[in-house]
Image (cartoon, rainbow, N blue to C red; front, top):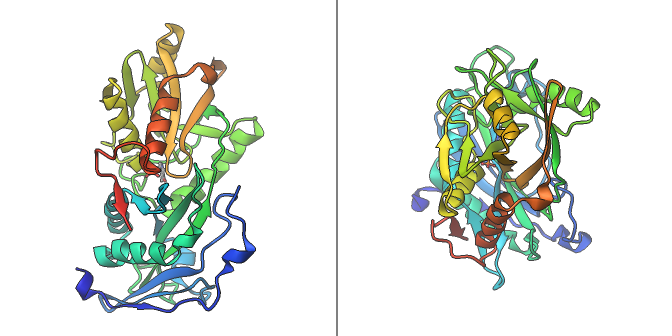
Length: 354
Ligand SMILES: *Cc1c(COP(=O)(O)O)cnc(C)c1O
């Protein structure tokens, strides 16, 4: 596969790194010296190039800006104590990227451009990976339609890019969550399972309303009955109920199949929990809370890894959790961080060396 890709590398004359401290970086604000860019034209990918990070020159009629054929991924690379660089489960993100592409009527991206291109880009900018604990390099591959035409149809041309942002530590205070009953994120038959830009735009209004009421995020519920829980903001959600870890199943296509979700479930199983992926109603959650069986609730996602929920509000019923006393989420979070930073055996083969 690698041999088929012609990759041009144009290096930046100077690194911007000397102007930036890699400690206490805000998420997603600073970008490394290089980016990868490729064009889809006439049914094939071409012009695969790593070049200095720079603005794009786009026509105002660019199709993506009007009709939203735009998808992305979020992945992290880590440096271990020996300075070796590893990317966490990039093949899972690669597969998901092409699932999103298919749903949005976009071309799939070949593995050599996505994976090999990512490895070469990360290798070139590896000085940007902070090697303190809880720091990493966030990798953002994305694709958008690039026809200069405002007729409504799938574009003939697309751009694939990959940019890198050093980040960490991602401090996330335990969150207050509002169970959403008016607005919805995803419906069966919709694009909830795709990592499409529009899903994020569509969620912002409801999130802003919840913030006005003093909450950090919403817990999305199903579109028909507002009864079955889906996700927390842009994170998957896991409930520890007795000796079970329960999370909404992916069946209806309304849940984004998170790589962190899958990793956390694998580690929860290793920790002795029974894993249940199934529909889960707010009534069952409240019953479990009342009977003292609902021990922990947390969100999972690449950016924050695991985020604790300290309050869950449904109508006027408030569930509070003393996250300081939790055992499970902190253990899973530690195991995951230790695997990523090379302090725990990578027995599932998640770390891909650059
Ligand atoms: C990206 C994303 C997640 C988390 O997926 P990870 O692969 O764990 O980062 C969860 N929900 C939504 C809606 C997302 O877009």
